[in-house]
Length: 521
Ligand code: ME8
Image (cartoon, rainbow, N blue to C red; front, side):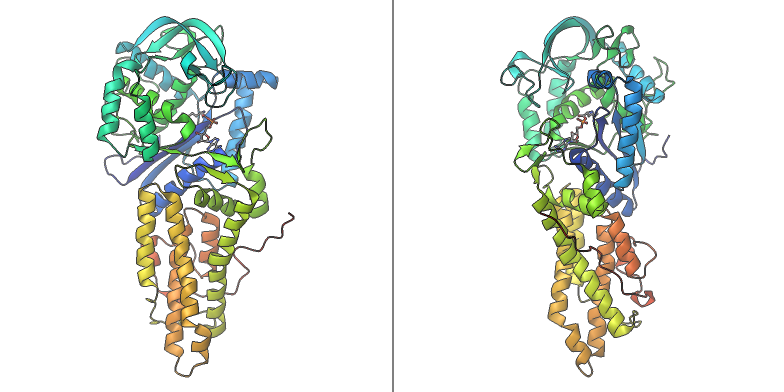
């Protein structure tokens, strides 16, 4: 079990969705995972204890059908895909602490303890059910919800009419409590627009939730503890992953002692669930009501981000326009891919990927940050042999640094990550402006200009040291490269970046941080 410090507030438990083990990672998955990674690194840098969870969703009809299509066993498919996701996240510098798989024994035990607890508390009943099932979304829709030509309203995929005996969770009983919770906690669902959508959805009566599938139709799942002929509905199984990884429920729990009453020694409740807007209902309606059912605290916040589209169209396997983050990484390295996705999408809104936009963002890195690093390091080498004298004044950019630190903290706090990154880049822009304004080349020529030149160079070096710390969460590789060029052993913590003695640093000339990339059209 991960170590915890849940009693103090300087801890952060951050989660991504667990991705279906039926398909390859694409830039949509990468985006959510980068968002979690940038926040995890930011909080670690600020000294918090962090548990950053990601993983794969491995049960359900979608997986069973994909395995059959590939003539594999479902477990074989899941093993292969979990490896693919892990490799992708490692290549893209994702610093997750725990990778959960829903086929793990620990998770299976926690799911069974959870549903048993719901049963014991009288929140589950049995009934005949008829509804339209979308395998793609792994959920039922009502006739009214269906899209044009009887398709699922989210992905437009086919649905099938299914009539069977199911177990139901009395979700409807928690509707008023849920509405109250959302109203009393205006920050609970971010951004505002999504919060309003959920409140709008809750203006209609909430139905009960089918939480089982007969094994005769679907064998690939976790059997219900009170009826082994049924498996747990994959969304219920999947959502519980957040609890499993928190260590709140002991997998060996007995029905009357399920560790539900005391979560203080665990990471539960999660501080932030990061999800795409496609799965906001499951996270802001199913999940909190299920938690109310077992009597556990709700996650502290949910962020639903927007949708990546490609040019003007949806990204989809059938259109063949799925953007592969690994291909981009091969050409540009991991950091520019992270930078593009995080900087380009206003957190919460949709954004479009085009090669032109990608290159424009790359140019921004090269022309603003890369250019600043090159000119400052080469001037320190040229004019001062790579080392500034002790006592050189380094406060020329202090007002800009103060403003930036505040804007970055504010952006991260409000989960407006694109704004935090834009503020960091703004400091590099201002530092470039300071070079123009101070004209160190003239100071170098002027007799008696020595001290002024030292001040210019020291102020710029200070800004670069701070920038290495500011860019660490978004671009860990480039921030480390930058720190190395500045003669540092590692990227300093933000508070140290402002005070560490600059005269101890030996700067060497180096190749560009963001090399020009020659592109075929
Ligand atoms: O829904 N733009 O898994 P999934 C932005 N297993 N984000 C995108 C995206 C796009 N075009 N496409 C996918 C599932 N995503 C369930 C989750 S959680 C308990 C279970 C991201 O593999 C986004 O985060 O379909 C979205 O919510 C998630 O991938 C869906 O991944």
